[in-house]
Each structure stands twice: as structure tokens, then as C-alpha cells.
Image (cartoon, rainbow, N blue to C red; front, side):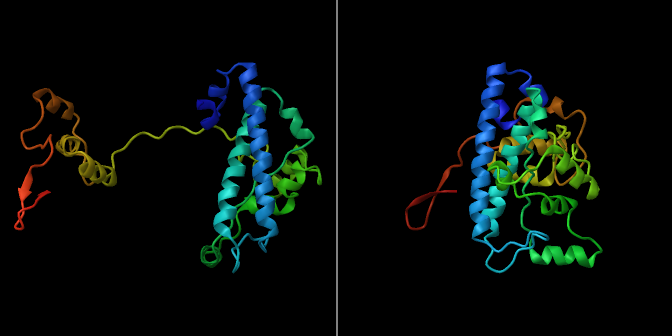
Length: 239
């Protein structure tokens, strides 16, 4: 279950060969199915492949949603290939990633500031469409993808084009004002304890705040349901 959501080398290494093989098959089937969905959306939308800028009439929401599903399945498939020592299969077939559509105003802003299309778009535009590769209509190997990445100035492995992306690290937790305000709405007790510790509106956290917990719950904290207040019309309503 964890491997389906977090297919890192450390997690996949805990699976049996049978489990890794089953997961590889699942991701492969999912990748093919989502690629078929991409093809359906592609056929019904006039998408500019070279820029991926949204045009009038493009169903960008559906395209971008299916792109995310396809890329997730592809990443899982690559991770399982690496975990099973079967990356040589990419020498025969390596479908590329799918790129989301870009809002026209955002693309115009990038151009106005001296920017341009993301290098991934250059790779996408050069390679055969993923569903064509998976259906066997077009050829696309690991060497083809790597060459397109190098021409675009990308590292093909580090960017996830021909290998699983290196697993990221969990960021150090830092309380934020937004987090505190959300807690204050949901649980006054926890919010008060955090406030007393200094976690409010970006203030510094006291190093000794855990000592406050030894004295029990502060007296000014509501721990139960608020009392009902009588209303002028005689009805009671939660305060």
C-alpha cells in the first residue's frame, strides 16, 4: 500500500519479487490507460505542441488532470523498473513525459521578463507522442530521450525523463501563521498552548514551552462545548 503512493528505492526494497512484479504490472497498465485518455483529449483539442499555450476552446482542465495521472503512473513504472533491475527495457521503449497546458497570460509574462518555454517542453515537442510509443506506432528509446534532453540543456536522469527522480527530503517543520490560525478555529485548547509557546504570527518559539504542559491545562482555555444562550424569540442557539 505504501509503495503505491511512495515508490522510492527504500520502500520498493522492502517488497518481495512477486510484489514488485505486481506493482510494475499495475503501473504499466495504468500508464497505458492514461496515455489512451490523453490521446482522446488530444484528438478533440487543437493544442499547439510546440508551445502548449492554451487556445480558445482547449479543455485545459481535462488535459492537465490526465497529464498528472499519466506522469504519476510513468514515474511509478520507472521506479519499479529500477527496483527490479529491468531498466534495460528502456533501450527498446521509453515513452516521454506529458506536459501540461500553460495559461496565455502566464506565458506572456514569462516572455516579458526575458523568459521562454520550459526546457521540458522542448523535449516533449521533439519526441513522439507517448500514446503513439506505447501503442507501437512510433519508436522512442532511452537514447532518443537522453539526446533530446541534452539538446534542451537538461539532465535526463535527474529530471525524471529516463530514470526515477531522486527522492526528495522531508522539510523541517516550521509553524506558520496560517497553520496557527487554522488550529485556533478547530481546537481552542491546542491553539492556546501553541500561542503560549510563541507560535503565533511568526513569533519566535520559546525553547522551554514544553514546561507549561506540566502544570496542566491553562484556566483560560475552553475544553468543552460552549453553553447555549437564550434568544429573544425564546429559542436556544449554540453560541
